[in-house]
Image (cartoon, rainbow, N blue to C red; front, side, top):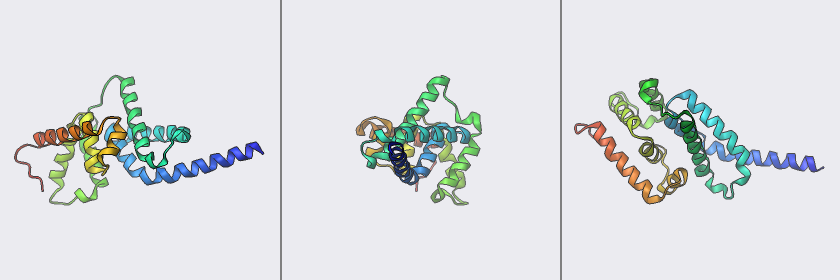
Length: 183
C-alpha cells in the first residue's frame, strides 16, 4: 500500500515536471547551445540538467519559478564543467561557421537572403563576447527573458544584469564596427 502511494506520487511529480519542462525546452536547448558552442556538448549539458532537475524537482518551492531555476541549474553545471576541464572552449576552434548557421535556423525572424551576411556577422560577434556578457545578452535579446529572470538564472542582481547587457551591446557594436547599421 505504501509502495503504491509512493509510485503514484512519483508519477504525479514526473508529470508536473514534464509539463513545466515542455514549456521551456526550446529556450533551454538554445541556452545550452550558446553556453557550450557544440551541439554534442549542448545535448550532454541539457540531458545532465534534466536528470538533475528531475531528482531535485521536489526541492523547488515555487513552480512558477521553474524556468529560472532550471536555467540557473544548467548554467551552474556548465560552469562546473569548465572548472573541471580548466579551459574554456573557443568557438572558432570547433567550426564557428557551422554553429552560426545552426543558430540561424533557430531564429527565423533573423533569416532572409539579403540579411544572411549581416546576421552571420552578428552571431560571430556574439560568440566573441566573454560568457559573462554573452549570456545575459542572449537571454534578453534572443530568448526574451526579462531582467529579473536573467538575474535569477545568473544569480546576480538586477542592476548587474542591466550593466552586463549594456556592456555586451557596447562591445558588440565595437566588434561589428562603425560601418555596421542596426535597423
